[in-house]
Image (cartoon, rainbow, N blue to C red; front, side, top):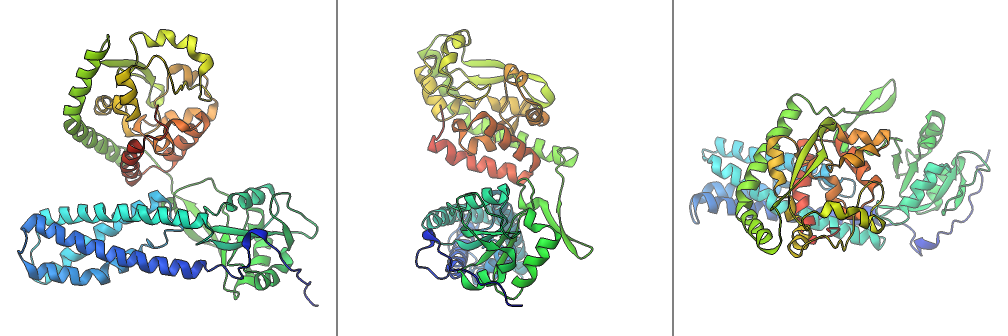
Length: 480
């Protein structure tokens, strides 16, 4: 029986292109990234050698390590799929960079041992830090370049979406701005006569999938949750095996970090396993150790600035230097949060008269031009310097360096049942909510980000958020 004839497909936003060059573009990008990585690792090795041993000292071992870097660097980074930046989230890329750098430096130490070169522990630590210090900004630059290029349509895969459900429509709508690396051509229905009501055309049915792959510039076929069931999967999978297109299957799961997912065979099928996160035992001890070390270093480094801020507050406005307020912490236990005072004395008594000017959603109160804020307070809030005393809360154990925003009791009393889960961990000095927009987010966005953080916690994720907090503070975006 002859297959149904496939109509000519017109996709206005695709232009005259016959095949998106995404794969060729990505190959060139991977090559450029590998060259930059080799150069940066070699620079880190030279700099660490100069710092530890001095200039012009011990040339043999340095020459050997620099000579090996063009082989070891792309080999290790490629093995950990660090050149698939178009598919990695920021936290997952950061975790893999930590692992790759650790293995790379360990490999060089092992080689030097067998080559009769001795490397000090100081060199190991300095080279590890310098490698990360050079690689991380470069990776941020590649991500910025990829985002900008995708906004122009580059590095995007022409995609056929199988399914016409509401979920399929939502996926198609998300793909339209190209940020995810897909360029949707349209939908294929699971049954004849089904039509997608979204902003993408319904091109035909799943029975015509192979013909559409051959007659359109499709690089990828995306199977939505309903299309990924047993019979539909078989109908879609078999025609695509020899067509040279990528097949993406929606797992229908809420967003989780890639490091928590493993693929397992199950009776001829493939199943996704999500590793549970348990903030107890060894993991809780590691997080607490990270908090204590980080807070101690922060207090030591910031103590001169803290003294200057205290003097400025004392000289410019009446009232105490520190502001104390009861907040709700871990498992709804109350604690006194510490901040540098940024408002006039007795500011809380004036809150009632300002409620009608609230610019935040939910139980939060936010006001960009709050008249209660002092002149010094505006500067402190702009740079989040008012939160330095919370390092004492971290040392005491009331807070963590990274965690959900600590709420007021009145906020907690208005929580819905699902929002209370954000109190299952210690509140944080910074968090995913801060590096994702700070005060620009709605209350519901805050809660969703907090719950995502709790569900995907890891020590590497905490370190990623701490490092990402610094450029967010300097950008001053959403700070008031």
